[in-house]
Length: 296
Ligand code: NAP
Image (cartoon, rainbow, N blue to C red; front, side, top):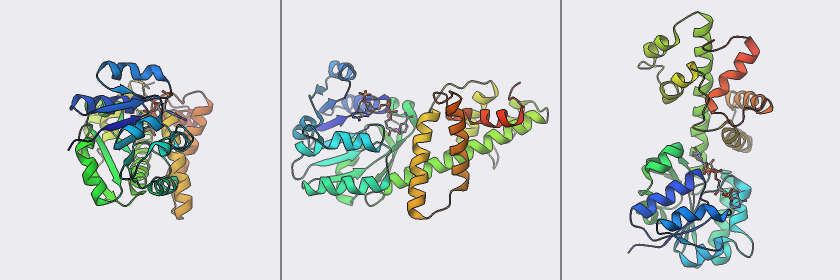
């Protein structure tokens, strides 16, 4: 039997995900703090609720996709929050990227209401949300994963049940460590090529198919060599995720020297006003230090 799906948080990611649920024929109720953002989805057939509480009260499954840990806290708690509307047997799925340890706390609060929790952060950017091709890493128990899977398939193509509650968020942070480590390597390599007087386009073609190839090199390399800093993912959002990595690594006692370095480089770029640029603008920090300029 098909369940009613609630969606709380219609930003860049949430609006695409909710639209895909509607397009696959699901019964969707939405809420967003800025109400005007619900209009397009309401026109496409969604019900616009007055509060997160009303979403949870009218739906068996409530999905959340808001910015950060305090924002998940805000939509869960209070007189108008999701917790106030939950019934026994309901399911809350959090698609936001937030703290793994806060996730355990939120899940326990939801379980106190007799409901269940899955943490299901996503990767694949705004394009993935719009096209329904996201990667989704899910933490929670088997039965709830099986219950959620048909709905997650509306906007995800790689859906992996990675372990118990909290492990979805941890895997998302693993993803972010890999993203910024690769970004630093691509930045260093391209600036080195520039210093050596190489043709940057030919250099990219020569190395991208070999052992050094990566998504970052293939997709952001061509943007970097023509100094196109338009964001797929902004430095400001990347920094939020790196803060989560550094906090979790501290709690776990796991060393992350490379990620710490990139965090400080992005911080310097934020101070210079580059927070709205794509995360591949990391190379600008090396340019500042060296006086070299990519494509210069
Ligand atoms: P976004 O476009 O900035 O949207 C943020 C959403 O959260 C908006 O709906 C906003 O409501 C809502 N929100 C923020 N604070 C709130 C609060 N205190 N109370 C209620 N609602 C609040 O962000 P996004 O790009 O969709 O990202 C959402 C999540 O997905 C983040 O955790 C992000 O890290 C993750 N993510 C993003 C990408 C990406 O490429 N963008 C990729 C993977 C994962 P308003 O409309 O009222 O501001």
